[in-house]
Amino acid sequence: MIKNHIVYNPAVDWRFDFAKAEDSYVWDDKGKRYIDFSSGWNTTNLGWNHPEVRDAIIEQVKKNVYAPMWTMDPIQAEYAKALIDVFPQELDVVGRATGGTEANEMALKISRAVTGRKQIISFAHTYHGQSFGTLALGFIPDYVKAIAPLVPEFIQMEYPVTTLSHFLEKLEMHLKTEQVAAVFTEPGIITGWGSMLIAPKGYLSAVRALTQKYGTLLVVDEIGTGFSRTGKLFAIEHDQVVPDIVTLAKGISNGAGAMGAVVTKKKMVENYIGLFKPTSSAGWNPLVCGAALKTLEVHQRDKVWLEAARKGVIVKQLLQKELSGNPNMKNLRGWGLEIAFNISEDNRNGEDNSDLSTKIVEKCFSKGLHLADAGDAIVLMPPLTTPDTVLEEGVSILVDVIKKI
Image (cartoon, one colour):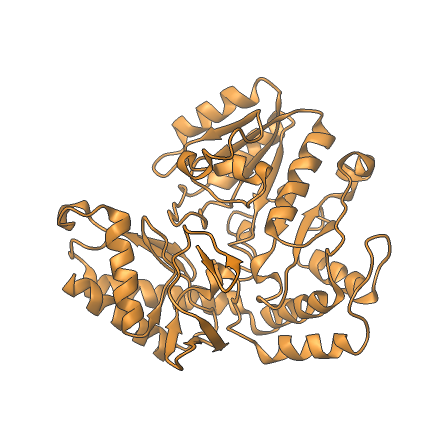
């Protein structure tokens, strides 16, 4: 669609004109307030327009607002050191990017340059960005048919959701060829496309073991899972796995500006930098670095991941209590405050799941609860700082709508 001279993705439902936002709430241009259960899809993890993050940008404005890519602003160096310090010691360098798509593209280039291989293994119906390379990682065929073909030599596997053994056998068959540069995955939970599938326990550890066995890199996309969303500062901590590359964006600056990062190993990449060419004219704008530095500080100081884990339990318990046995909720699942459930096929009245999910989202919106329309599932992603009482109010609206569908 086109609105106000801006071209919008028609797959993203237009629901309202955004006027302002604060903490756990957003307002439309009519002045109506909504409880937000979207966080801009895992972006405003610390709540909308966090005052400390906003103040950090104001302070940086007084110093410098841009640095060209061949130099370094002091705030960039300060943030790089702070970010590296919260990762395992093996991950000791970082590449600058303007967002998640660029970060994931850089990870793809590093993987090919370092290994000399071309194939990339990823998973169907996952989301890693909007470039040709990142769309090729997890594209839905109907979504890209008009712009196909994408990047060749990418292998899409089905994401494991029951047992690991059969999946690992198939994965090893691919890796045995020693043609695979990298396995590209989220850390055991899918945050894109709305499916929010969860792999069996031990998934990431098992994949790490196989990739090491065959000289394949492990790239973990933490763009949706990073910055406390899943109950850990970064979701790789759930399995204590050290990948070769971790990509970050979204919550990195709490929505205060476009920024991405590629965290990797100096020993691995230092002889290949000229081959993968980490260039970004606007990567790590000093204003956004100021916001990112404060964002990371708040996460660490307040141990936000612990609150995300605690609040996630509250939300799931409330849903289970109110909707257990209800035909319109099945497969309730989640990590931290990344929670989802599917709509049962047994009570659809001729509608497909995505139609019914959209109907639920629209009815919730009319009652003052803002959800992202995930299509195949109801996905709850509130700001991690949302007070318990507000979480309970939002869940109450959702439960009331579902009971009346």
